[in-house]
Structures are given as structure tokens and as C-alpha cells.
Amino acid sequence: MNRIRVLIADDHSLVRSGLRALLDAQPDLEVVGEAEDGVVVIERCRRLLPDVVLMDLTMPGRGGIPAIEELRQELPATKVLVLTMHDDEAYARQARLAGAAGYVLKKAVARELIAAIRAVHAGKTHFNLAAADTPPASGAPLELLTQRECEVVGLIALGHTSTEIAAKLHISEKTVETHRAHVFEKLNVKTRADLVRFALEHNLLKP
Image 1 (cartoon, rainbow, N blue to C red):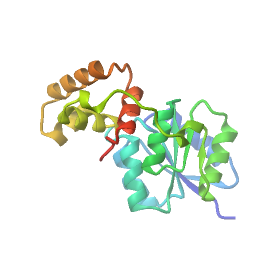
Image 2: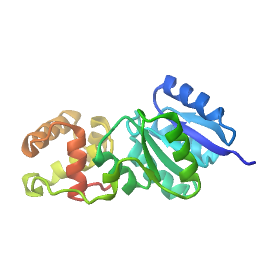
Image 3: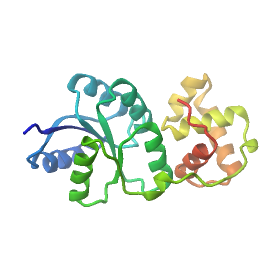
Image 4: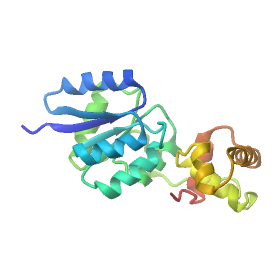
């Protein structure tokens, strides 16, 4: 029997070790590699060609969402299953739009994760947040933001750090942080998840 080849992408070594032990104990699963950030996961996938990637959303170097989009373009046969702590509809919807085949919370029981890996490998989807299928609700008006603030919102929602945003927009990190503060104040949002939701509602997720 051919085993399902899995690559684990998470920036915590203890998480990767625990997942490797869990998955390698299954007769039909095999961990073929690990990656600690969104840049390394692309490189490892190109070399190892895993069947399924377990992808954390918040990693250094490059966020999980941009990594999912790049993987889906370069290696469409590789399925991406998000494994995250973010119990939020906006994150699940964002992952699905990026091309993920499934979304599992880290607090889930082991049997759900194993079942999800088998499901996405078989061509099915597994999203344990039902709202990932539902359209986003209306939010604050887009007109509240300047064009530059809209660009910053989109990049933040895609998982980019202030340093990365500054480089992409050719502005200073301090300016990025100023834009971020203004956005949070104008939109009356408290968390990054709220900002992701707003970006989804207004189609600002443009890599």
C-alpha cells in the first residue's frame, strides 16, 4: 500500500515533532519533511513533492496564505490542509480562497486531523468551520480608507510583516505602523482577524 506523503509546516519544533510521531504511527501516512516558515515550505515541496502539506497560517518569513497560493500554482497535485490555532471564520474563508483543501484547528482531536489528511488526499475537502462556505457580512465602508491604507490592509491580511510591507510599498516600517494604527482606528477593529474579515468583504486580498 502506498503511504500518503505528508510535509509539516509549522514554526514550533515541538509541534512538528508531535505531529511527526502521530502521523508516522499510522499505517497509511508518512512524514517526508518539515518546514519552519513559508519560504522553506515552498523549497521543500518542490524537492519532496508531498501529497499533503499541513500548513500553519502564522509563520515567520512568509505567512501561510501566500505560501498556499504559491503551492497551488506551482504544485497543484499537492493538497494543502491548514492546521491552525485560529478559530475564526475569516481565516478559514481566506484559506479556502487561497486554495486550501481543508482547515483543522490545533485543538481538534487526533482522529479528526488524520481523517482530514485522508479526505483531502482523496480529493475531498474538510473545513470544520461551516462559515468558510458562507459569504462575508457587510462591514465598514471602504471609503473610510485611503488607497495606501487599502494596500496595507490587504498585505496585512495576507500575512505579511511590517518589514515585508515596507519593502513591497517602498515606505518605512514606521509609516506602515502609522497606516496600521489609522486603519484600526477608522474601522474600529480590535484584532487582525477583524481586519482579515474586512479585507475579504472588500476584495482587498491581492498578492
